[in-house]
Length: 324
Image 1 (cartoon, rainbow, N blue to C red):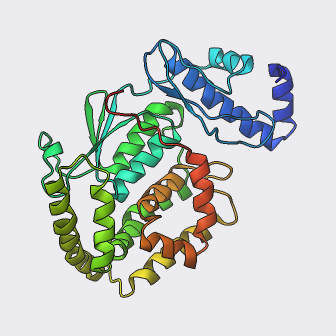
Image 2 (image 1 turned 90 degrees about the horizontal axis):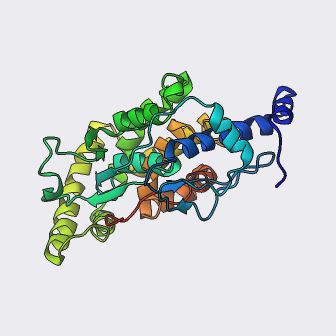
């Protein structure tokens, strides 16, 4: 690819080339990551961008770093831009997520980490015994350890990480973005449990998914699967009453359509790229996508196309093995 000098790039931005402006912003973000990771012995991740074309997620993003960070889409222009940027806050070096695989709040955090290419380890918490977090006074998940500091509550975790990664944009969330972030926590998550655990069969399906992703013994897996499914089946009935849900699927379909209407024809709520609200909705829906409730949702609503775009935008998981 030929070198594009800074003056030519700025001329195209000033002339109103929206695609170029978007690409420029992506290069800024990419070059920020390049500077942040330089000199650190951590895993770094990058997405490939065509500076004057459409954005395409790279199918191979993970590049092991040993004292330096390599970007598949880096160029001399990106390095020049990095030299002109103020020093960014450090990307976390040691991130461990204590989670339930099917927990919507845990998946909100994972969607953020995956999209921003923050490498993280996962510890699956047994939903019955919770021995994995016995050391913590906070007994819910997600619990995120970031360079030795504990973070709790998915919304608070995401905002703190965003401020750390983008200190220059820490207070720039739009009113629309804040509105839909609140909608995720105050409405969307409440329609999930009555759907996931709508009947005992679907409750077993969900807990089978959970227990096959954790490092549990055979006995623990059986207890968690059947004990958890039974407990959550009855809990979901109480949640259904508490949130005035009479028809579980109707409530789920209505929430999905509400979100699609909020997009107003845009690819994402954030426009050309996902914002925090997009990531929150995607994260919350991701654990049900291949359960019966998720399959029904995609079949009976218009949310499938947006969900597919989000899968491509978020890309591969930034999760690393615990032994890495």
